[in-house]
Amino acid sequence: MSDKAYEKYYVPAQSPWPIVGAVALFLIAFGAGTFVNEVTKQQPGFGGYMLAAGFVVLIFMLFGWFKNVIDESMSGLYSAQMDRSFRQGMSWFIVSEVMFFMAFFGALFYGRVIALDWLSGGSNNAMTFEILWPSFEAMWPLLKTPGGIETQAMPATGLPLINTAILIISSITLHFAHTGLEQNKRGQLKLMLLVTLLLGAVFLCLQVYEYIHAYRDLGLTLASGFYGNTFFLLTGFHGMHVTLGAIILLFVFFRVLKGHFTPEKHFAFQAAAWYWHFVDVVWLCLYVFVYVI
Image: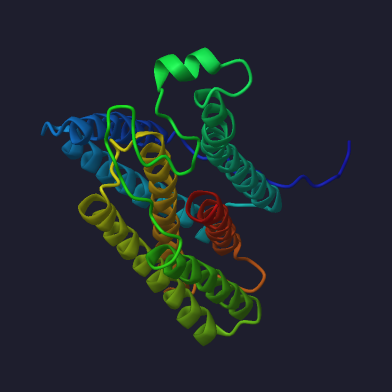
């Protein structure tokens, strides 16, 4: 008989939250598609309500699921192996998010590098150019659609540059919050984490204002062809990720106020920081390829 001691591994009971999350994502996906179609065709419908309902269900799911995990963690049910599982799970989640954005950046690359050349008669596509779009000019951004809809480009200065500075600063403040936690400086931790949350909220408010400016002043809408589609697709999905990151950091902030984390045990904080830094890096790439180049 071996007297080797095995590490316990907690197996949670069946949970309703994955199916609740699936319902939320379905409502968001179907509602967003319907809402975009309604906005493009200027036909009011139920898409916006379905999209809002999806976000409500998603937030409800996050509150419920996070509460269960927090209760399990604070009850001492997790082992070192469970902690390693959480780290691997968060790492693979961020990898999947990288692939998610790579698909959209890939679409942008294809349109700008390949499709532009193809439409302008490059290679052996001279007949295509003459038949499909005789007046086409190979330039980026495309400010006119084949149907004659004209728009203006969103400049890299102004709000986009301010938002870039805000996200960079938010990563710095979050780093100082993490340093405060590791050094058990609770005041620094709370202040820097609160500043990070406020910066995230300002970023989202400015992005909403940017969208209003795009629609009202620049004529940059979802009907603005490939440029408008890629602009709102990339910035919109990034804004959604910033919102999710801010919600996660808000949960972490409440836990900090309750004294849940210690310098030795704080992976929930670390996972939220990983995600926030990832979102910031995505924005830097987005700012360069969508706004600047």
